Image (cartoon, rainbow, N blue to C red):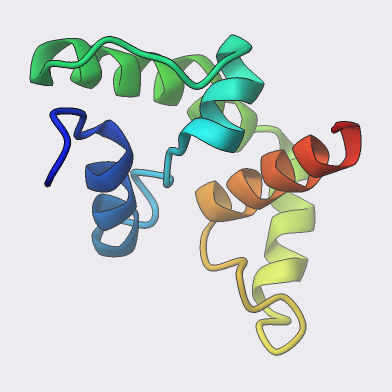
Amino acid sequence: MASSASLVGNSKVMAHLLPDLIPPVDREYTLKFLFGNGQFKNGVEVEWKKLVQILEGFFYPAVQFPLFQSKAESWLVQNDRFKWDTSYLKILDNLVIGFSKMVT
């Protein structure tokens, strides 16, 4: 990658390869939603810890809620209507993006 920050780009690649384990993380939506801004310290170890914090503190707990799982299942089977909803984690990412766009 051209920048020294790898969290965003690598999370997006991993989200395609491991959609049930890693969501895409971006500065504009994910980081602003969770931390109030899109800034983070560069460095593989620091960025890895940030990803773990994001996964364990938000994404993994949120997708465990039965109501979320029920809604997500109904969206996943309607992939002609909800093309961007490809996994529970991506659905949650899409909800974060939609919410963020509504409040800005």
